[in-house]
Structures are given as structure tokens and as C-alpha cells.
Image (cartoon, rainbow, N blue to C red; front, side):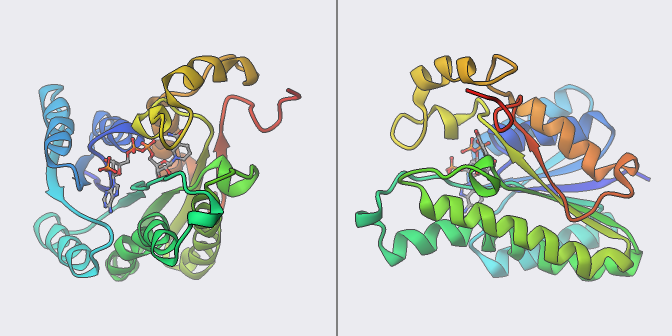
Length: 251
Ligand code: NAP
């Protein structure tokens, strides 16, 4: 049976790399994003390579849309095997400018946005007695502090709690829930001068990473496909750091 994989924020970056990796393994990938053109481009890259995918617009702050999309996928495809809750934003905001609205906006996407997509899919996964959920946290959520990004760090730490709680609640239903904490990965998010390292910072960041380079989306995607696979059948509730040795480095 073809596996059905739902990925949020899959038009670009880590989400797009995950979509391509799952499709390469023979899954049907439901590529979702707020970015329509980019989402459709991800689907085209997959289908051009002989894979199976469809684009569905989804803003993860919209509960009704998440509920409707999950119901629609289940109706058309018979169920969802894997969710990669990936969509996220990381805006630089110093604490004296961090309004309630800015804090809430980040949490609404980076933490509640994951919950919104997972919640409607859980009953179907429970009924079928199987499912795998992979949530994107960050090294900023599991170990590092990130100045002018405390809302982001807090939300990404929240993802660890989401993973642990759900893993325990759903384990006996045959559903595994894990996370990935990426280090520095070459995507639009990281290359943003305004909000993150920017292109120059990305160039030199490798000097401080034991493996000597920043990561690529594919470095994360391969871990996502592993965590969702039978090979990870006894792993649940874990958030795996994928950072080229950054956190254990001595620099
Ligand atoms: P990215 O390149 O910015 O891609 C994220 C995607 O999610 C974009 O298409 C983005 O659209 C979309 N998105 C934003 N808000 C959304 C919403 N409300 N609903 C649906 N989609 C939305 O980011 P990335 O670097 O691939 O990151 C993917 C995940 O990994 C994120 O959760 C991020 O925090 C995490 N992560 C990344 C790194 C890194 O170094 N890159 C490190 C640790 C963790 P817009 O472009 O319009 O915002």
C-alpha cells in the first residue's frame, strides 16, 4: 500500500526536501504551504522524477482548514500514515519590541500550528492502529539560547513537550511521535539577513561546526524518513539533534 504523507510548509527548505525524500521512497506526498507557487514547484519536481504528490494550500493557523484538509485526504486516500509538522517562522524581535501579538503569532505557527494538523489526524491513525508523526524543533529549542528570538526558542522548546506528551498518549495506539532539532540548515529561513545568519553568516558558520559545514535540507529529510519508517519502530518521544556536531563541539 502506498503510504500517504502530509507535510506542512513543504514549498521550500526542509519541508520541500522532506517531500522529495518521502516521494523517492514511494509515498504519495501531500505538499502543503502558504506559498502556492513554491508548493506546486515541489509537486512538479516530485512528479517529474516519477513520484506521486499533490499540492494543497494550508495556513497552519487555520483550524477549520486543517480539519477540512485532513478529512479530505482521509476520504480520498483512505488515511494518513505520516505527518511532518514542519512549517515555522523565526522572526528576530528584541525583547523590548516583543509584543503579545508577535509572541502569539510565532506560537500560533510554530507550536499550535503543529497541534492543529496532528489533532484531526489522530482519530484516523488510532482507528488504523498505526501512524508516525515528526515535528521540527530546533537546536534553539533543545539546547541553545537565541538572543532576540526568545519567542522562537520558547515555541521550539514547546515542540519538545508536544512530542513527549503525544508520544506517551498515543504509543498504545500504534502511533509514534518524534522530533528533529536541526542545527544550521541552508534554507530561506537561515539565509535571511534580517532574521538569522544571512548569506555571509551561513558561509562562515561551518568554521564552528565540527563537521565543517552547515546542513542541507536533505540532511534533515533523511532523518525524517527514518523516523517515520519501520526502522525506527521502537523510537518514540525523542527529539533527535541533527547539527553536524555543533552542540557537542568544543568551539
Ligand atoms: P523556510 O525555508 O522558511 O520554510 C518554511 C515554510 O513554512 C515556508 O514555505 C513558509 O512560508 C511556510 N510557512 C510559514 N508560515 C506558515 C503558515 N502559517 N502555514 C503554513 N506554512 C507556513 O524554513 P526552513 O528553514 O525550511 O524550516 C523548516 C522548519 O525547520 C521550521 O519549523 C524551522 O523553524 C525549523 N528549523 C530550521 C532551521 C534552519 O537552520 N533552517 C534550524 C532549526 C529548525 P513563508 O516563506 O511565507 O514564511
